[in-house]
Image (tube, rainbow, N blue to C red; front, side, top):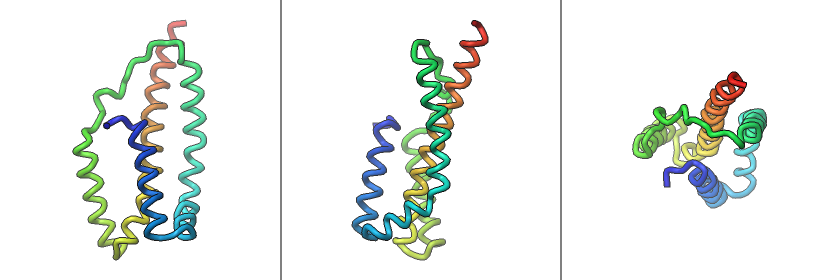
Length: 130
């Protein structure tokens, strides 16, 4: 279950379900709209990801990120530390969970950056030979 392709959509469903339950539809949409700049930042990263995915589809790729993978346990511990800090800095449980969507978007940005860097290194290596 460590596959980000599965964890990110499941996490988004969990976050949105929790938001609708705790905040309601109006506040949930307000939280999502508040992160519009980060969401817009996903567009060029996604376009670069799609470009590299199409350009490199017929090539065998090297995973340059294989040594930089964090364990699931360390990611959960990191998240829990942030939750404790957020609980005290935001002053409540609702303030703490209101940041979950931001964390999710930042996680997607980090994942796309890592994938794009890996694709770029492969692209540079493959087309330098040609």
